[in-house]
Image (cartoon, rainbow, N blue to C red; front, side, top):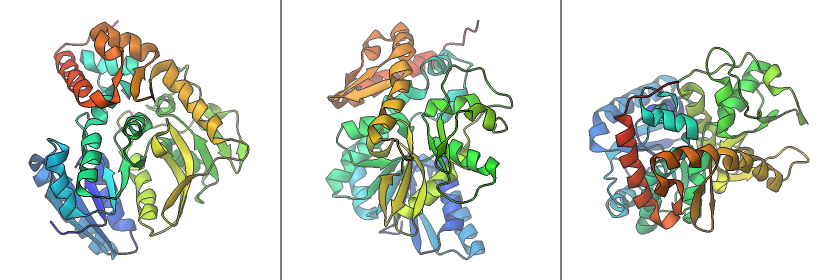
Length: 367
């Protein structure tokens, strides 16, 4: 492991892979990347290291990648690793819940996630991120913290615990970039979108899905349109996670936070806010870049509607489930559905992991 590094990427899944391999082609200034995960992930990470370094060489980019292993057991086992790595920026992409669960329908867990949305997985999406953030404090690590494990909802938990999570990557960026691509626009900032993760589902698959989900709000050159579904009917996302878009959404954000360039785009969960927002990054500093006439309070209130209808909110140190997310979860675990104090995240995550194991062993009953 080469230390210190500019960027630490935790995890070796498809999202982390896309970010790593695309950074190898995009960084124009020297960039030292450390990809780290569990020891069992090391063979895959070593292959990704070789691939990224080869791509950087082919593209003539000054990107250099190394690998390392993390013991995720506790903040105390993570902290020594952070002390050695001394990253300037952390992109956290390691989770005990793969994103593919959104598309699984062959067991009772997949059906529960469908009914509750991926929001029901937030406690386990936040588990490793919370340990990592506590380890940062123990190690005296002041890196910028970008969480990519369902940041639309998870970042509210991390921020509620007092952790310095800045934002996420992907999700809203999928729609914003797809819309700009269909318009043939290549300039940053011409398309601005306000979107929650739930806004993505109607565009998944080869044909439009009937939906009661309100469309995202979209501004083209500063003018809001009122026919979003009709205007972008050709936008069709894969049923699987849209990694070729979502992963790359993180690349300009990462390069901007590392002060290699400025950027106008979109991120989910900035500072723990629900949903995704238009932003700009100038001189490494992130700020909202809302359309004219839209206030921050109005944007947050618009996003919160989704959580109150079917999701979760975090307030006064407590997580509360709402709507079908509460109702369906209560059918399996009334104690979990009642919510929990953020200080009890580890216990709540253990309870959800036990529920997941039980439901994954239960075949789906459709109809």
